[in-house]
Length: 211
Image 1 (cartoon, one colour):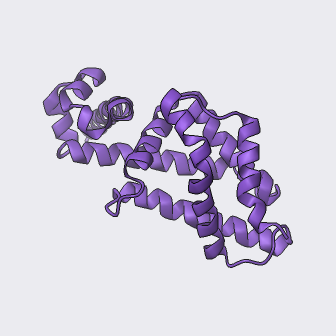
Image 2: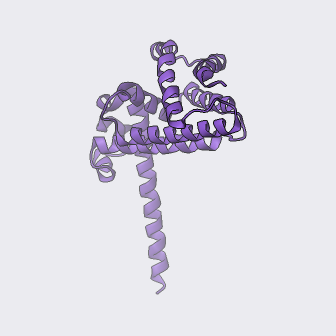
């Protein structure tokens, strides 16, 4: 009877150790996939970066694609949770939209690897019909979130009455259209846009929803 608590304690240590190793692999994979993309980063490089063996990686992940999808998922979950915690529903629609844009650009400015990975994936495959399920998930969550923002803004009388679903597609379409002014700057120089440019960008996007 006295041996059982010890066995459980040892098992707990092993679980924590496995969790630490898995996280080290995911951290290394995030960095290398963000830098080199899926094709450019090798399992050997990821193993070396994480300080583990190649068989260690295959113990936790079925293959390279499985590791890539797990890396996307953990960063998508983190990003969505961060955005929801940073949003303040007491602010106006414009202020909320602007705050979220500045928050994302702040992470980009700080060269957050998760943001770099998701941005690279979006740019490389955003127009594809075969998006990874993780990217589809973040798009779905983002669309739902924006629908709620638009519905609340309509209810408050901040913007003209509009179907929230149509409003989201309007905003997404304009974001792609207007980002042509800023995206080449980021892609060519990795220089992020300033807060003043973000404010100008948001005002251009929201112009069509004004009352």
